[in-house]
Image 1 (tube, rainbow, N blue to C red):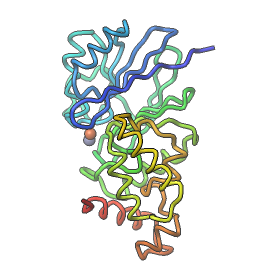
Image 2: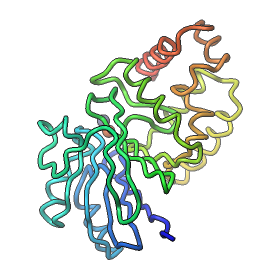
Image 3: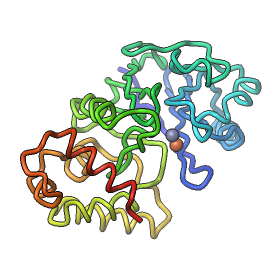
Length: 258
Ligand code: ZN
Ligand code: FE
């Protein structure tokens, strides 16, 4: 029997989360997307944990800026997409699609999810039903298209949709409330969405995190996973359209939403 992983999510910068993952059996700890080093070092000290490795989902500064100090201070190893080695300094393990490795006895799978950036990857823990999805999927939202086409990000999201519905989605930003306000304009009649908005407002009023969410929650409320919703299709005047066309329209409407 393996013990449950312990996860601590640190709010940093204006709206980022850094997730620490600790395996009580092996004593190993990983950190996902350390935007800053100091909060991670402080947390490790408080918990009495030592850092084994860093996982980077993509090269943006708000995901990697803490890497070098953490490597220097803790001697940890850096795992990131080998295709991004020109823009993520100091990678020790050059990852590729479907690469697998372990935190203690807990397997980790790399899923390639281009769209927000060309080299974006996410980390799936199949035995623990956890997904660390960076800026690919957010609570009721998805990443902006900085380096990919709508079709590419749509394809990436299709991979995530096939994971077990109880998978806990740990994204890298607290954007859920703003995303939900937009979602309400696309699918105002969605009762699961209305219900989730009430929960999310309550959490934010109490300064609590809305991350993680379950994949089931996202499938029910996230307009970027719901091109097949008749209500969304009707709202956008795209009944029976190609899912990629609908997804692209939702993405561009979100880009313009204030
Ligand atoms: Zn990003
Ligand atoms: Fe980001």
